[in-house]
Length: 151
Image (cartoon, rainbow, N blue to C red; front, side):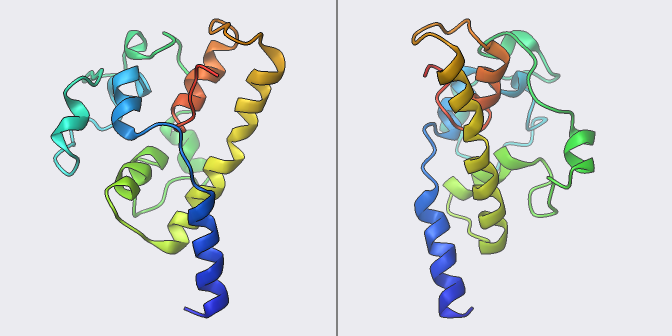
């Protein structure tokens, strides 16, 4: 890796400051409880002690009791799924938190995370502070990207 490429990668790592850990996201209620389809052995058991899990998608397991986001087929069609993380961004994030680094994938995923902040901005712009019922679908979506939905 060239020194300029290494510097660029390090800059991306500095940008990445998620507000929530995977454990907190799972406890709050994300992905209808069914993201991992039971395949959780690679992750710390502590992450799942208070997690809201379900064998199948259950909207009641979501923090805001709404369905948010696109289908897996839509993720695939948009080129958002990579062979390294076939379940998508959250799987990448969990593995990242656990120490895995693949610089070219990390750079892509950190850029995607950063771009999602536009939804945080939209909530702040269109909702009165403290009104957690305003834009519930968008709040559920930002939870999926490790942003605090109680902004």
